[in-house]
Amino acid sequence: MAVLPIAHVGHPVLRQRAREVTLEELRTPELQQFIDDLVETMHHANGAGLAAIQIHRAIRIVALEVKDNPRYPYKPNIPLTVLVNPVLEPLTAETFLNYEGCLSVPNLRGEVPRFTELSVKALDRHGAPVERVVRGITAGTYQHEVDHLDGNLFLDRVVDTRSLATWDQFKEHHEAAFVERVRAIVARYGS
Image 1: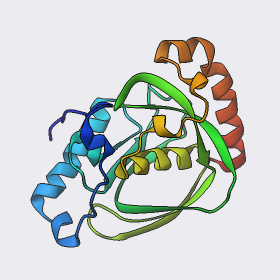
Image 2: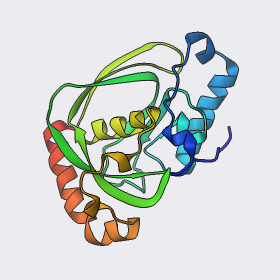
Image 3: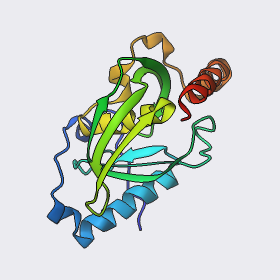
Image 4: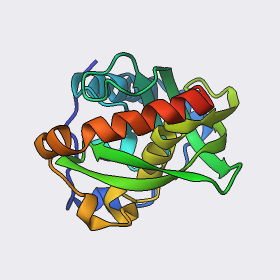
C-alpha cells in the first residue's frame, strides 16, 4: 500500500465531476490496489473519509472510517466502508449544522447544513450492492465525502462565512458548543 498526495483547494481536480466505475474496472487488481491506497492515505492523514478525487483520481469511489479518530473525537465510529458509485437520497427535509473540516482544505472549518437521514445505495469494493440508511452525524460524513464526487467542497455549502475558523480557533472558541450539539444529535439518531 502507498500513501498518495492529497489535492488541496485550488487544484482543478477537486472541481471535476468524477466518472462512474464499471464492474469490470472495479474487479481489476490495479483498481483494488488503488482502493487499498485510498484507505491507507485516509488512515495516514487521520481522515474520517476520503474520496478518490482528492487523491487525483476522478472516479466515484469514497472510503469512510471513524474509529476513535483524534481529529474528530466527538464523531461516532463508522466501520471501514468503501462505496463505489454512491447515490444518496435524503429521507427527510430536516437538517443540522455540521462543523466540518476537510483534508483538501487544510486548517479551516465551517458550519454546513446536512440532512439528518439518508438512503445510501452503492457497490462495495467487490461489486456487491450496498443499501443502508444513515442518520445524524454519520449522515453528515457520508454527504461530505460524496459531495467531492460532484466537484463540491464543504466551503461551497457554508451558509454563514462567519462560522469559518482555523482548527486552533475552532478548538478554542467553537468546539465545546459543537460537541454539545453532536451529543444531542447522537442521542436522537444513535449516530
